[in-house]
Length: 160
Image (cartoon, rainbow, N blue to C red):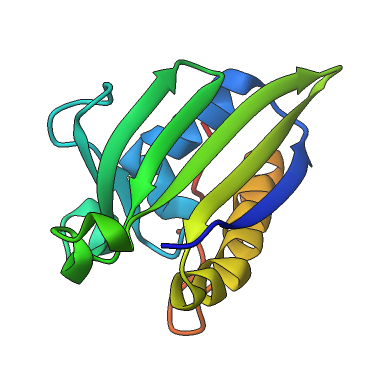
């Protein structure tokens, strides 16, 4: 683990509730995140495990971690690790997703810190794509095809 930090800020023409739903609800997450879903098998609460999994949350695990802080419609803080590093806390990084109303928009701030070099390289490309796809999905109902082999969101998909 290092002290490297990645910061990404975007503005989305939507409400905090819709951004919150897009982050936590696997059926929504998969629409803009290349078919992958965020799931918390024991519920979205402090201390509970969470997973980012393929096939809408039913497939191979992409990331795993623990929920460190949760303030509905405002802030979610998670540990973040590759599944193979789940048992090695030294390989875990931390992600904070902060949601703030700014007029008729939402400012979404992603702060991913405690990064090692390998994870830093992965997420520095991944977060901008994921956030752009989420923004597009929430504003237009159409996600971006962010992973070359993944199809875009299902035709007729609707943003929350």
